[in-house]
Length: 355
Ligand SMILES: *Cc1c(COP(=O)(O)O)cnc(C)c1O
Image (cartoon, rainbow, N blue to C red; front, side):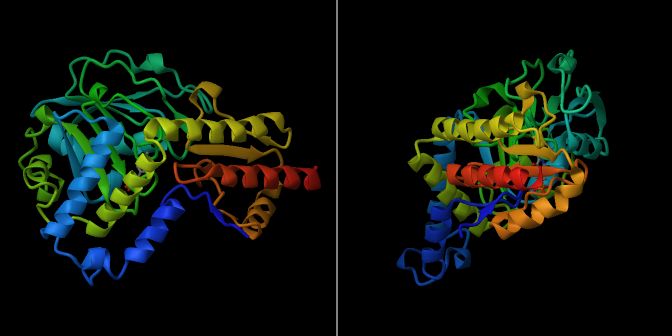
C-alpha cells in the first residue's frame, strides 16, 4: 500500500530527494563523512550552500538587489525578526489579517512597536482585498498570501505604497511570482522546502540595516547578510536538503511547471468536493488555497470514522486544524497527482458507504 502524507507541516518531501539523502547520508561525495558532520566553513559545505542559494535565485528569478538569508527559528522567529529589523524609530507597520497566521504575526509584532491592524475577513471563508485600504506611510505592510490553517489564499499581489512583506511559509515555490513586487518574503522550510527549523528570508538590500539596537544577533539581517548566513552555525543538514529540493523543482521544469501541477491537483480535489453532497468546502472559490484544501463532512459525527478509515488506507494526517475543525488535505509541491487520485477515490467510496 502506498502511503500519502497530507500533513500541513512538517510535510512530505519529494521521495526522490529523500532517497538521494539516504544514499548520501553516511558518506557525502566520497568524503567518508555525512554532510551534517562537515564544518559549515569547509569548502565542501560552502559549495552546498552557494549552490542552494543560486538554484533558489534561478527558480524564483530573485534580482541581485535582494539578499537571500538562510536563518533559524521558523516563520515565528521571523514574526519577531521582521519588526526588529524593519521598524524604524517612531515608525509604524501595517498588518493585514486574513486568517490564523497573519493574526499571530500581528500579535507578535505589536510587542516591538507601533502596529496598525486591518482585518480583511468578511464572514466565513471570505475576504475583501479592497480592505487593504491606504497602505502609504508605513515602514512595511505584512500579509500572508496562503493561510495554511484556513485554506484561504490571496493570489493577486496587492499593490502597495510601502514595502510589502509576505509570509510565504506554505506557498513559496508553489506559484511563479514577481519577487521585485516585495520588500521581503519569508518562509519556514517545513512545508514546501525542507526540514523544519530552516527559514528562508529574501529581502531587498536597502531595507537591511535599520534594526533596533536590541535585536538579537541571530535575528539580525545585517549580520546574516554580512556573514553569508553563517554568523552562527546554520542548520546545515536542512540547508543541504533544501538544496536537493531546489534541484528537484528545477529538474521538473521549475516553478511555472510546479504551478501547473498544483493547479491541476487542487482543481481535481475542489471539483470532487463541489460535485459531492457529502462533503463541502466553505471558502470563496476566488480565494481557495491550492496548497491546503479544507473540507467538512456534512455529518460531522462521521469525522472520526473518516480519519480512521483514511489512515487504514495509507492516507495520513487529514484532520483539520483544531481552530477550524473538519478536514484539511495539504498538497504541497511534493504531493504527486497519484496522492490526489487516491484521496478522491477514498472519499468517494467513504461517501457511498455512509450515505
Ligand atoms: C507553518 C506556518 C507558520 C509557522 O511556522 P513555524 O516554522 O512553526 O514558526 C507561520 N506562517 C505560516 C503561513 C505557516 O504556514
